[in-house]
Image 1 (spheres, rainbow, N blue to C red):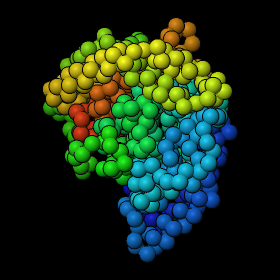
Image 2 (tube, rainbow, N blue to C red):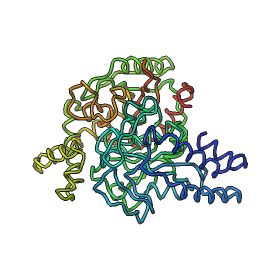
Image 3 (cartoon, one colour):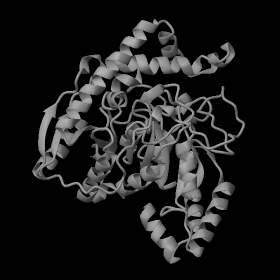
Image 4 (tube, rainbow, N blue to C red):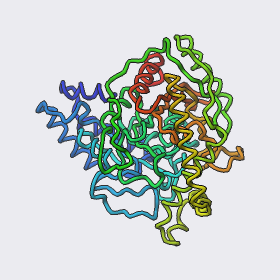
Length: 454
């Protein structure tokens, strides 16, 4: 059941938050051995929160319309009373003293926290495996990856182990696992959801929701959004509210982004998304194929930001700790340590030029659409598809990292499955601040394909 249906059942006394939390915990425990979606499950805390929610609903005083909805938090965001290990053996296991701003907003809404979901070390790659918690697997086929870095959240969502799942996205870490597991996930406009402490990966990093359905995605994003003055990078800009926006495909101006700046698109994915875009056109949308501005330099520009963030994250580790870090992350950090300050600042300038060009492009179109990911889920525990010859995960994530650079809201939506039964996704992107329109598109898309959002 979605959050809205659960809340109606709570209000009418047909279901209790305690019953629902017990069911969600049972589901989490049932899939954990096979999928390894959770780094920790706290049944006692969850049931205590559920009992408090139950009392509020019985008294007619819920904290919010989603009070008592079971939720999970990625192990990269602070939760008071729980450790945040960031998927690393080098981090402190002591409980955190306070909630991160997004978690505090979720707690204030009465959400029930089941536990923390797995991540690769420091969330550095679009897969989910690490020395601390091992390999997380895809519910559609445990031999393949759920993607990452919010892979645990995606696996939990796909299996119904909770309704709301907090993820983070610095280069595709919400949208790639949403694509690989057949769920919904949105990277909001940068700054809509507050973050503290600041990510070492800087202003490419976003916090956002992962859910099974578009409506839940919108409800969760509304809970998480708002100004928090701990987050200086958020700025004082006031984004438009998340009041529902109804979207009709008829007359929409849609730019179809078919070619990523790095990597190649699996032919099966290309054919599936071509068919989805043709259906949008048949519904009355005006579709034009587009190319991203500055496409030839985007991989290099992103690498400067991402590799520098990795170097920053590892800079405080001792030599012994650094030797224990994921070798891939240590390698990219070492590359960044050889760069000069002028080289890095040139990448910052290039990013600003690209971001302005993207703002202009999204002033010409209502939405851009693309594949959610260029590749199908591949063997778990690998950074790149075996046999691809690609050096790093970033090369095959070419439909996600450009939108981290430009900070627009972008959502991954289930678009069917491959011949082998693995999920394929459509990505939808709108101009900065237009998150409600992305949610509206997702709802209209879900209404057109209800069988994909079960």
